Length: 452
Image: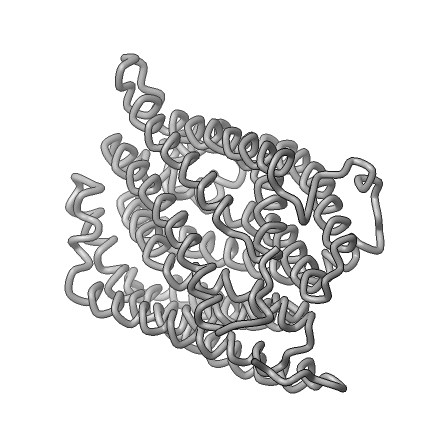
């Protein structure tokens, strides 16, 4: 366990963020390799995999429910130096991971095709997206175990083992992608199904490696089957923190699905361009996300130790650093958006849609950095309802105008991007105001030790 209640806040944030950023960067390389080979299959395959990939927001939502509750409660226990409590939380997290994984498999195979038929532009897009999802579902189910173990380590201030495992699994994914998607060396290309299979094999490898790490090397939190008996009070505490955070991503799933629905009449080319642009956007967000993901552990331990000033300083430093990075990337996208997307599709229309999307959406980068940081602090203090409220406000103010404008004469795809920029700016302001209120309510400790 690493004590984050002593020493400079910026150093702790950076020391945790850098390994996560490296892991995310390697993960991004996989996404780019995946995009490259899927893009070679044509616009229909790219649109299908992109639309199917939106279902990952559901998995992210469920893993957030598990991961956020695990990180927050273990960080609080670590701040109080309560090792037994940290171990109980971790093992109950593993039990919940198993239940969520089984539920994912059942629901995924039952409803994937229906979901794709509701948003896809044509039958070919549905076919490609369904093939991808069916082969990726086992990997999605196993991600719960991976998140439970990774979150336990983050809650104790440890991120390097997770980074190493992530890098190894992504390298495996990168190696498998051309073999399974394009048929390199086998002469049997699997297309979109190969992309899903490559991801599943890599997740399996990651779960095995983390399991071995916990059994052989980890000392502070450990796998203890005696603690696997369901503890409903512990589940209630974990879900009380995690459910609102998961709700955020369920709302984001609805947000993205609404965009696919609104632009479906523009054809598979528009959906492919949006899918490509949104994947690149997710990669661009990684620096801010790495910093924001470091905040819950740093602020959480200090919250558990009742160091109010250090919690506030964590927000200030994280918001400042992530906003500076995202401002730089905004400027780059304003002038070089096409450079980021043109290597992933041979269709000039797909490239045009993706580049236009990035130029518009880059105005969201700095506000998104603030939103990510606020969400991290809500998690650290054990109350994620304000984050969900700000996301719900964004979805509501986006969806209602979008439904109306999409039915009007003269509706163009750029109208969607304008709405997105306006609503993200609104969400950023709401998140900041809610965080200030949360600080005033939760950081008034009766006897706050002097901050370092």
